[in-house]
Length: 494
Image (cartoon, rainbow, N blue to C red; front, side, top):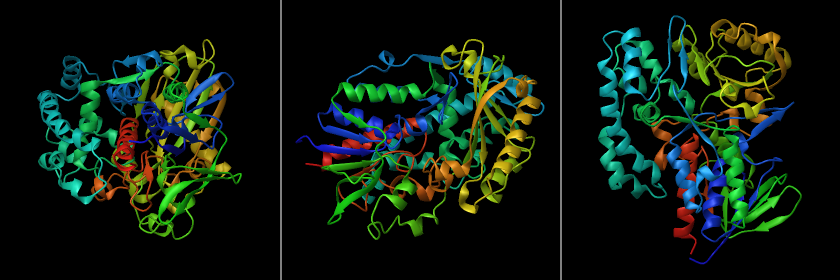
């Protein structure tokens, strides 16, 4: 095809991946990013010598990331140092702790000790979920630009493996009798902001992917991936314009023709790729009446993921705690209902803590730690108050929970600096519609053809990448969304 002039809005992981691939294919790539650094939620916060990933901290399906660098003629390991995690993480309940590992013998030993009689379930889990994964993964790599794609061979073949009408928790009951053990294999629903009691059973491939392929850390934090992609784009002749917010997509006769920056500059383009949060983009990046199906009025009727309350702590001590630790609420099911169904904050909360400095000394001063804490919370649909007083009250409860349920008993005495991001800040300062950290919900009615499509159905010469489009949220699927859109540009932009 003739080489095209392509403008990408946003230098998040989707925009950067698309930029790498398209630049490698010879197109002129220009990325416009409103922030002063690349990465979006896959960027870093740096303060007082500490470095924190803003968002993603779990790197799974690393082979997908390797493929993206290969698409650009590069090798991931030439840009990032990968560190496999074994055990992968620690799951802390009120009366026991489980440390999942890809070593099946060690995993079975833990299950046998903590949940006698459930040992045989692990082998069955691996056997059955591999079949589901093998059937579903090809579906995630396809585009669903037309309804006809819903009847493609990969999807028809996968239908019997989707367990339609069942939840993630239902399916895990096929392998394990104890609810707490099932929770250990279903908490991954939180990666897409859903309840395991409501999350479609098809997402059982997520724990399978972890237990079969493992999890990696990137030295310096996962934000290093974004920095590496930006470097590759520069090497391939692409341009990244920082501190350059886009005001709107220019549309003529139903087709995108470029973008207008907030300073009034018009940038012409043959194709526009949108990597902004989907809901925010629909609400702010188009003139009135351009968008019909996904209009601002209709957006609120869709289902969205939960939000998160984030604490980033600089600490003058290194704790002997796991790299990833999840402290579960005493009553996890009620905690999830509070978040997803009741839209209220739980006093009995679940907290995820990343203690990366134990393994990675590059992200904090010597002898110090950069601690990352995440608490799932309701999104902003019902506009919970997050004034300074309520923010501090909730922050104190989170710190207290971590001190009570980990070995960090003196944590409050060793904090040197901190930053907090609440759901309202995700919404107002980080441009996430309703502060929904994991974007549109991943219900059956909002997946594949029924999710916003990579070749945007409402505007011609316009393409979508990121968690709000197919295949969904999470780094590997966002990378895939970028490859799908890049391939669509090759196919349709003759």
